[in-house]
Amino acid sequence: MNSKPIHVAFANPKLEKDFEKLKQGKFEDKQLYEFIERAILDLKKNPMCGVKIPRRLWPRGYIKKYQIKNLWKYDLPDG
Image 1: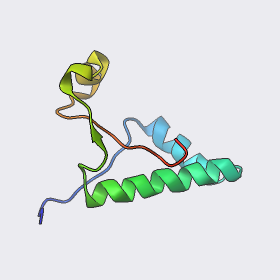
Image 2: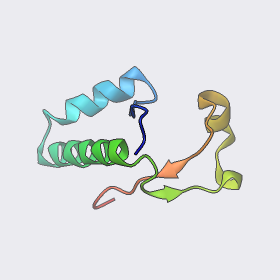
Image 3: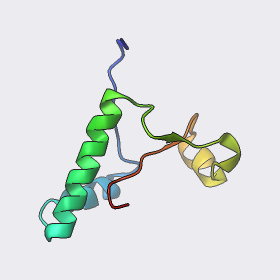
């Protein structure tokens, strides 16, 4: 079992605010909020859930802007 705490964060504060606004939106917005919330919980349980993206496919902008060391894709329902 991993003893390090697992943190899931948004890339920027505006993205997090937009995510929180989904909770108050229409049915589809609320549903998307729930899907993303479930994804966050899944990632906290297992940070390697999803599909690992091969390094050769990483966008250079991600590497430069976020200094990523690995990249995974998590598919949302009805994605």
